[in-house]
Figure 1 (cartoon, rainbow, N blue to C red):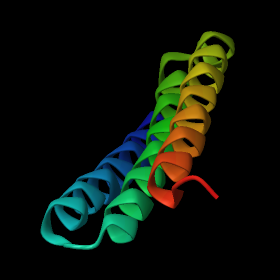
Figure 2 (spheres, helix red, strand yellow):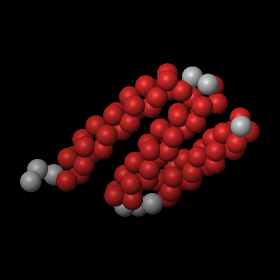
Figure 3 (cartoon, rainbow, N blue to C red):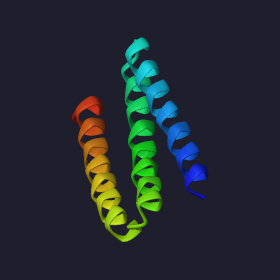
Figure 4 (cartoon, rainbow, N blue to C red):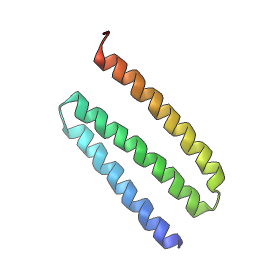
Length: 86
């Protein structure tokens, strides 16, 4: 089962790298933000799969929740900054 989780880990890492490449190549602010938000979600999945591999899923769930809350706060702040004062 560890080989299966490692394959999932590598696939999600590939998606994160693809989103990083997409974020660098695109010109629009909204495209870059969307790529960043997708990367944040995939990194949460990476953390959880890593927890499944280590067998300490309870510790990694706490870390993933903290990271996702930080990503949500960043999303709200960036949306407010880009959206302007309306």
